[in-house]
Length: 188
Image (cartoon, rainbow, N blue to C red; front, side, top):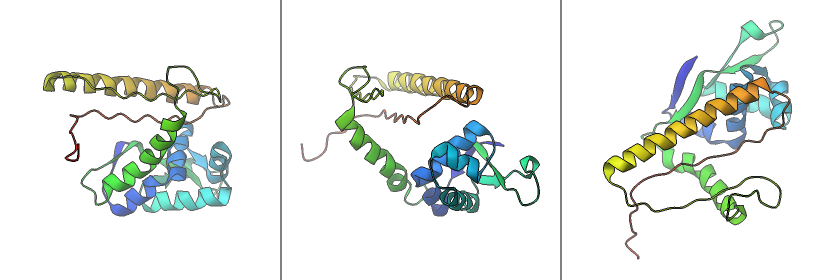
């Protein structure tokens, strides 16, 4: 399995931008390999819908069949081709396609996030933190490296725990890291 699949074609970008396909890729990362019916149960989607999305991901080269895990020649078992997927920013439409679901999620989060670090009214953790820091270029680089390292540690930990405790109910929590110089708009 490749370490990272670089999304560079518009067809692959369209494939990975769909939220159900993202959940399928994530679930395959947890399970290692799975049949459409197993994935449908895991992500609570109809099996025919999951089969359709798996074929779309296969056409984009993001998943492949894993015949070594099949019961017979008719049994279709799937696996990811990479442990992570990264969108090449030079891909036509990359910014719009990659940011569209994240922007919609962020807009919903803004209305529901707790002001503090306590779970909100449904008992789920949501946090929105916006901060401005006076950093040098070197400090910004160090801060960025530390944020990425923290995110990588938690990603590894979450997947290890999910694999070790497959029956434990889990939700997909999204993290959006953005760090860059604040640029004032011309209208301000």
